[in-house]
Length: 193
Length: 193
Image (cartoon, rainbow over all chains, first blue to last red; front, side, top):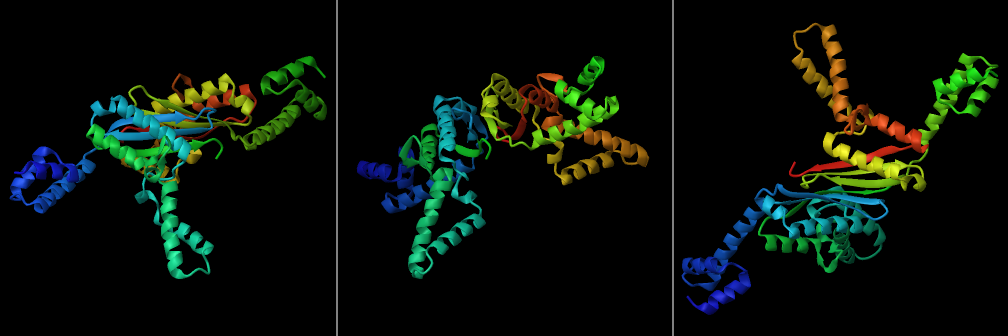
């Protein structure tokens, strides 16, 4: 089993050493076959992680100075152990502040009701009236992507580091904490609105 | 105009001196007539106060130690001046803590959907099966009153002083602050539920 091949697979798949060795053995040292095996296992594993019940975690809140905007957010992880870490607590605090500032309407794209997307599309179509159909179609794709980026928490640029999305922040947390971490729900109140 | 009569009316109606004098003049010093006038004015005034736009106030939150229960609540008053008082801030904090502890489902009786009341009634009827209709009817009234007291924030005994209801706490605040004070909305998250 070539050391270079293992190294290459580690870099390209991000899988662990033992997993790669097992996959290469199973694949008879065929690189592509090994990647396929890793992918299948990886997918299974990712699926497992996303399915694993994330019912620990914490409820965090943030009141913007002046008391006119407030946020309540529930962040889930899998174990009380992770929930008690500073990393997890900081993530929850950051997300509460982010929600206060960035005003998301939904957690992720899947949470946007179909009729809302349809309504957005109609507005854009109205704005683009008279333009050729293929141009309108292209515009629509861009406009909807823009809408998701504004309305969906997971798609929003993270307020403390706009180079990444909130989705990436969560991905980093999952990688670091080794547990499924999810934003379960949030409420955002603006005084008098 | 008798001083004793004015004093009596002040105690029984809680109205101001000038209002009482005006009512007595209007009523030709007839006590009952004066009370009626004051009541009418009082009602009008209360109605006005309840209608007056309460769009100031604050959003307050409370996280129960351990981070498993969190509450976000919006309390409205009419002016920023009142919103900045310690009394108002303490009221908001007390209400957030109360909601965390007492788990209301609705703000007031009017917010309970008709189908929820119907469902509760059905359950109680099932429990009382076989009993005479008039007894069932009496039980139902009591059970529904009990349900409102458990489910409606305004009807709940105030957690810091169970001798009064939250509704009374708010009434006291309205009297003390001289403004319409309302619980506009709340969110209560319990971890993993």
